[in-house]
Length: 151
Image 1 (spheres, helix red, strand yellow):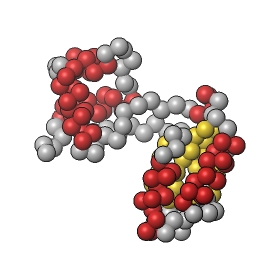
Image 2 (cartoon, one colour):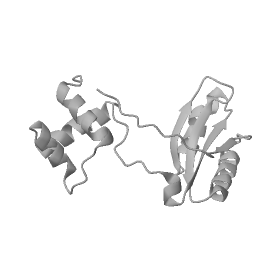
Image 3 (tube, rainbow, N blue to C red):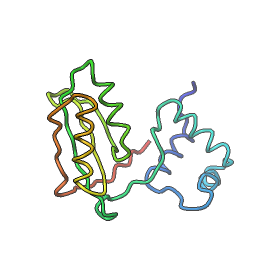
Image 4 (tube, rainbow, N blue to C red):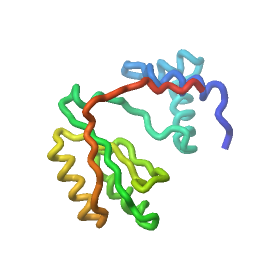
């Protein structure tokens, strides 16, 4: 597969933090870079297929929408990591799920309308996977940074 070129990098820089809010955002991006809407979409599809882009979507501040968020951690035997992660990832409120080199080796964030719903979902995850003792570390103070990677 071809490597990323300067146009790919420019498009990724453009969409990270300033995605056009128009009826045809990819056409607007294309116009900026002298490309057609189709060319922009093809480039993004190629970058997604290569695993460079995970997803394109909005980020929201949960509490401003009436939701709560929490960070969760679990100790999962190595041979159960994939199965446990698949169960966790099936919940629509899970926004991140990653493995760390630590006793608590699986960490994930969960957003839901209430802490009761999160607690219920964590109990359900434990029942489905047999993994007990999942830590629930609700956000009490949020520190947000703007993560923009200059490509």
